[in-house]
Image (cartoon, rainbow, N blue to C red; front, side):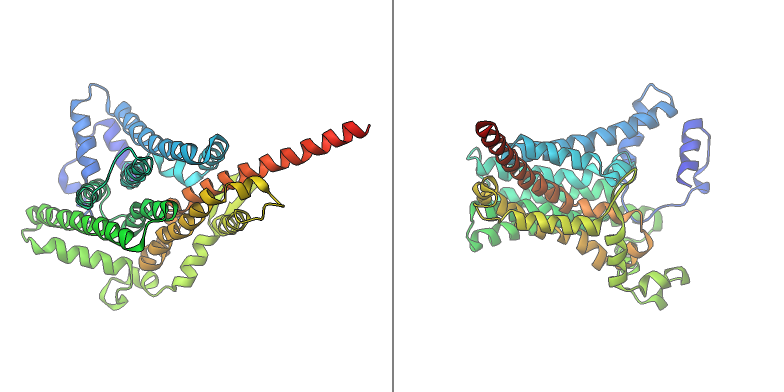
Length: 372
C-alpha cells in the first residue's frame, strides 16, 4: 500500500480524500513539512520524492557523523574510524535512513544535542542550569513527537537521558547532583509529552468532534501494543497480545545486526562481543598496557553502553505486542543508542589492542633483527 501511494504521488493522480484512511496514531508533522516543501518545489513529483528521501538520509547521516565526531573528540581517530565502519555496515540504519514516515533523525536529534551540550560543559565552555535542562528537554521531546509521534517512544526517551549517565560516570557527579539533573530532564520530557498529547487530541477532535477521543485512542493504542486484554481487541491482535516476552526477546537476539555476503552476525552475537570488549577494557597492564592506560576513559563508556541497552529492552518488553508483530522492523531500536555506544567501545578498546599488538610485534622484529 505504501508503494501504491508513492505511485499515486509520482503520477500526480487526483484521488479524493474518501479513498484514504485517516491514520489516528500520530500528528503527522513530517507529512506537514514535506507537504509544504511539495507546494513550494518547482520540480516534478517524482523528483520531489527522491529529494525528500535525500533530505531524510542526509539529516540522519549528519547526526551519525556528529556522534562519530564525538567519539573522535573523546577517544581518538582510530576509535572513531572503527565506530564509523561499524555504523556503515549496519543495515538497519541504511534501511530506515530515508524513511519518510519514521523520519529517524527526529529520534536522534534530542540525543545528539544533549550529548554535545554536556560535552561542552565537560570541557568548561558552558554551564547548564536545571531550568535550561527542563526547557531544552521539553522542546526536544515535543519536536520528536511532532515528527514521529509515539513511535518507539520508550527507546527514544531512554536514548535522550543516556548522555546524563555517561557524564555522571565520566565526571564523577555526586548522586544528588545527578538526580536533580535527571529529574529536571524527566519533568521536561513529561511536559513535552503533555503538550503533544493535548495538541494531538485537539487535532483529532476536528475530525471526530470530541476532544477526549484523542486521549481515549492513545490509551487504546498503548494497550493494543503492550499488555491489553486480548478479549477487548479484534481477533487479529490476539496472538501478539498473548505472546511471551521471552519469545519476543529471543526473536530480536536472533535478528541479523550485520549481514554482508557470507558474514552474518546476529544481535545476540553482537551482545556477546560487547561483553568481551567490556571485560577487555579492564585488562591488567601486563597484558595490554595501552588499554590499561585508557581505563579511566573506557570504564565510563562500558557503564554507558550497558545502561543504554535499556533503550531496546524497554521497547521489546513494554511494547511486547508491537515487537511480536513487527519483526524485521523494530530492530532499529537496538541502535537507540545501545549499538552506537557498543561500537564506540569496540573502537576505543580495539584501537588500544591494535596498538599494543603492533608494539609487541615491532619489538619482536627488532629483537629478531638484532640477534641475526
